[in-house]
Image (cartoon, rainbow, N blue to C red; front, side):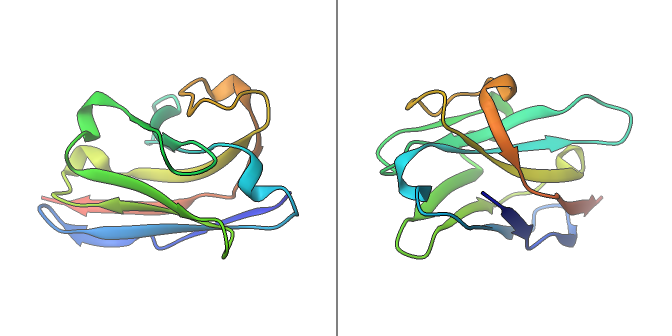
Length: 124
């Protein structure tokens, strides 16, 4: 499995960005996908996750109501729509895949495949 994240960039506070993650492999639709982020000097943290059908999602409290995770299994894509961006959202964002659970888990240790990251910078 290979994951390729894209869509990052520079945006003003209050703006929006949509991140995309393209996945290879034949079992994309079988497992949940997640988004994580890592700001400079900080540890990686969970952002959002979605189950294999897109029926269940989970979010970090600080992004609830602002970010929306979705997926298109036919295109083998997962998305993160980010609205009302804040400077504290500045980070490298990574998509990841788990095959150890069917639940949209926030446990980074359960994800086995990671994309290369796309940088989001939110200016104040």
